[in-house]
Amino acid sequence: MFRPVHEKCNRPGIAALTLLMLLLQGCQASGPNTASGKNQKGSRSFFRPKGAPWTILCLEMRGPSRMLHVQQIAETLKRSRGVRSQEVFVRDEDDGAARLYYGTYYRRTNPKTGKRSIPKKLVTDLEFIKQLGDSGQSFFLGARKVRMPLPNVGNPDWDLKNAEGVYTLQVAVFEPTDDFWDCKQAASEYCKYLRKQNLEAYFYHADASSMVTVGLFGEDALITQQKGLRRYSAKVKSLQKSNELLRYNRLNGAVYTAMSDKGQKVRVESRLVKIPGKDGSDQW
Image (cartoon, rainbow, N blue to C red; front, top):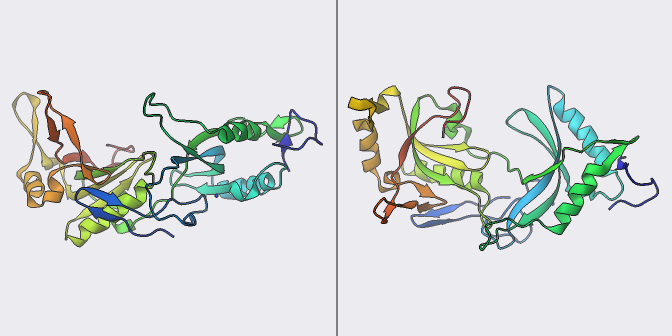
C-alpha cells in the first residue's frame, strides 16, 4: 500500500458503443466511454456539455513484462488510503507501453480566453498521486494530466497501417472538442459508411485525431512538373471527381472550409497524403 511520503502514516489521504450515423452535413454518435471502456450510464451522444474527459497518467513501463509490473503496481495503488480504487485502470497501448491511469475529469475551453479549465479535483488528485510512495520515496513524481485514452476500434482490414501503398486520399479528419471526443469510433464508423458505398476506405488513429482516406496509390500519384511543382495524377483526380464524398475534406463530419487570399470562404478539397509509418513515422 502506498502512502503520502511527506505525511505521517496515520494521517488519512486525500469511471457498449452504438453506431455513428453520419450525414452529409454533420454526424451523431453514441456516448462517451468510461475508463473501463463501458458506455456511461444514460449516455446517448458523444456530444455532451460536460467537457472533454481527461485523466491522470501515473506511470508507464515498457518491455516484455510491462503489463505484469504495471498491474501489480495498480493493485497496490488501489489498496492505498485515500485512493478511489474503482478509478484506477491500466492499458497496454499500441506504442508498446503499459500505462497506469487514475480518475476521470471533464475540462472545457473558455470561449473568451481559449484556455482549458482545470477542475479543482484534478489539481488535488494530481498532487496527492505525486506524493504517494514508501520509505520516503515518491513513486509517481512524473504523474501528469492527459486526455482520456480511447481504445483503437474498427475492422483491422481497413486500418491504413496495414495497407500497401505510398499515398492515399484524405477525405475526413475527426478531432476532439469539448463536446465530442471519441474520434476513433467516429472515424471507424465513417470508414464503414464509405465501404458500404463501395469505396476503398481506410482509417488511421493518431494520438490526437483520426483520419479517413480512400484509395491506395504509388509514387506516380504525384507528377513533378517544371520548376519542381507537383500535381495529382489523372487517377487521383478521377477518384476525387467520382463521388461527392471524395471531393472535399470533412472535419468532424462537415465539409471543412477556409478563407481564401481574397477573404472568401472556400471548401477545402480532399488531399493526397503519405501512408503513415512507411518511414517509421506519421506522415500527415
